Length: 454
Image (cartoon, rainbow, N blue to C red):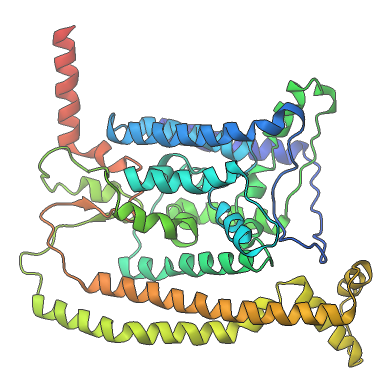
C-alpha cells in the first residue's frame, strides 16, 4: 500500500510541477451582471466530444461497481487504491473536475427554482449514481471513486485522531454548507459549491483533457498551455492538502455537502464492509489503521442506563431550542446572504448613488451594461431579499434539526461486543481489513489451498 500511495503523490507532484512550469495562468474576473449562477464548468466539448459526456456517466457507474467489488468480493485495499488513482486521473485531471456529483446538487436545485433551466442526463446520473450505490454498498464512492477524496487520500501520511465530539461538531459545517448551496442555487444566485471548490484549480493546472481532445482531433499544433482558475482557490486547495497530511480528508469529513446525503444512506445500506470475516479478536489494529475515526470500539459491560436515559431526556428538551435558534440565526443572516445576488448589489448601489454616497466602480459599470431600469432592479432585489431571507430561516432550522438529531444519537447507548465500522462515517477504504489478522489468515489459507489444488 505504501508504494501505491507514493505513486499517487508522485502523480500529483508531477502534474503540479509541469503545470507551474508551462502554464500561462489567466484568472478571469466574473461579470457582476451575469444572469445565471457563476460556475467553474470547463468549456463545452466540440464535435464528437460533445456526446462523450455520456461516457462519463458510464465510467462513474463502472468505477463505483469496481470499487464495491474490490471492497466486498476481493476485500483488497490495493484494488480500491488503484480504482481511486484512475478516478483521480479521469474525473480530476482529464475531466478537470467537471461534471461533479457534489456540484450536481446545485443543478438539481436550480432546475426546481430557476425558470427554464433543465438538467441534462449526465448531471442527473452523476447526482443519483453515488446515492444509489451508497444505498446498496455504503460509501464506496467516497473511498474509491470521488476525485476530491482521492487527491486528499494520497497525502494522508501522518493522520491524527480527532476526538469524536469535536469531529461531530465540525461535521455540522457540511450540513450548513449543503443547505446554503441549495438555497442559493434554488434562488438563482450563485453555485456556491463550484465557486469555492478547493481542488478544481489544482486539477486545471494541467488541462490533460483539453490536450487529449486537441490531439485526437488533429490539432496537436494548437495545443494550448494556458489554463483558467482562481489564485485564491489554488491557495485554498494547497492549504487543504497540507492540512490533509495530518488530518485525513478534511474536506470530505467536515466540509463536503454531498456527504450529508451519503451518511444517512450509508447507515441504511443493504450491505456494508466488515472489518473481519470472522469473530473479532479485539487486537485494535483496525482502530489504529483507520485515519477517519470511523471504527467504534466495543461498549462497556454496563453502559450506565440511568445516565443514558438522563442524557437522552436533556437532548430531547434541547432539540426544539436548537431548531428555534437556527431559525432566528437564519432570519438575521438573510440580508447578508442576499447580497450574493447581483440584483441586490445593484439595488444597493443605486440607493447609495441616490443618497450621494460613494459607490463601487465595478457595480456602476455593471449597471451601465445591463438593460433593466432602476425600478425593475429594486423590484427584483426586493423579491430576492424576501426569498433568500425565508430560505435562510429554513436553512438555520434544518441545521438545528440535524444538530439535535446527532445529539440524540450520541446520547443513545448501544451495546457493541466487537470493533465495528460506523456505517455513516466509514468510507469503505479497506485499510481496516487489510491489517486484520483474521483476514490475513483467511487469505493465507486461501492461497495455500489454491497452491495445493494447483
